[in-house]
Amino acid sequence: MGNIWKFPYIAGENGGGAFVIVYLACVLLIGIPIMMAEIMMGRRSRQNPIDTMITLTTEAGADKRWHYVGWMGVIAGFLILSYYSVIAGWASAYVLKNFIGSFSGASPAEIKTLFDNFIASPMQLIFWHTLFMVATMLIVARGVTGGLEKSVRFLIPALFVLMILLVGYAMSTSGYFQGLRFLFNPDFSKLTGNSILVAMGQAFFTLSIGMGAVMVYGAYLPKDVSIAKATFIIAGADTIVALLAGLIIFPIVFTHQLQPDSGPGLIFQTLPIAFGNMTGGWLFGTLFFIALVFAALSSSISLIEPAVAWLIEHKGLSRQQACIKSGLAAWGLGLITVFSFNIWSGFKIFNQSLFELIDYITANLMLPAGGLCIAIFTGWIMHAQHSEKELAMPDAQSYTLWRVVVRYVSPCAVFLVFLHVIGVL
Image 1 (tube, rainbow, N blue to C red):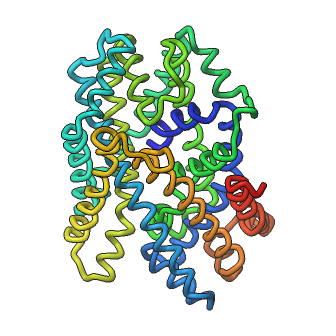
Image 2 (cartoon, rainbow, N blue to C red):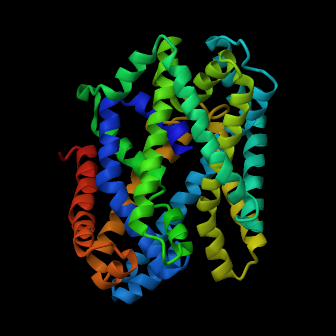
Image 3 (spheres, rainbow, N blue to C red):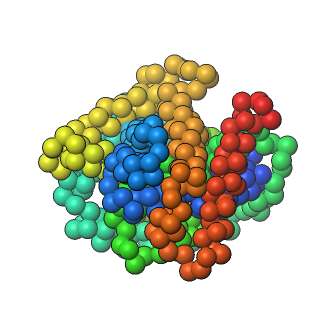
């Protein structure tokens, strides 16, 4: 959902093509090496992110302050979950709206009005936010493999097929080539220091780096699975979905004279236009939003699991008790996002709404900072024989290349972006 919901609107806000190039460079030079490092750390420790940092720091004989990296990741993931649940609630509501035919034959103006009225109602947003958070808590409490895993194995490929169909629809629109140019024709004059930071933040956000989720997946990863191969497959598929989302959204935007920088509601104002006008749109739209909700659930369980695991291991809670406490806390924080779209919409900090501020701090500051620490720790602090053993690369040259990138290239790139943003460069 970070690709389908978030990538198009932040690409639209940051000039399109030039932003996409910087984003792709961030995925390749920063995201993939650090993702490998984080998965490797999780698999070596087989614990939650906080205890992983404690164990690996002790193993390396390093300063105990490295423990805070685990805490920062869990807190960042928890904050992201609080607003992620609200946006996933939007997608849940749009399953029903599409099913009852709210978009059939509706004009772009009518669809925009429908969305504006929806987010202006705090009670509606709270209802769908609550529904999604309860679903997340039930899944984590009962276990993933019984229901969600089987559903996701079908619905995620189905979502990909539906996106291909929507690209076909986008190709039939009059704004297709204008959307194509916007997405792939770079205009670097539109790129700012903040745009570069947002591109890097999106690479971390969409790959779930620095928020503890990837470390948790690593903790459950079997020994016979290649970390490098898994990472490249994940990053490749992830990037393809992001680009497909752009190929769908921007032709619709330009065909109907919408604004590419319309913000977080962009897909909820563009995709319904397609579903409302295409043959079989009622069926395809309903299936699309159902699949999107399940994709969101697959992410939300990984965001809440680090906190749940820590409560179980350190507070002696049952899994059900840990899920209830974590879920209620995330739900309560999510109300800040809910109200930022309506009753608190006029309240700004640094010219940003509360939702925008939480998103900016987590995705663009906390996640890259966490990723920077992971790169430094695995490249400079962790014993080389340990990382080499866990990564189990096919040859020594591949491991050496990863180590050089994670020690020098990735940290320097993150650091230079931070310097650029604060005006030093």
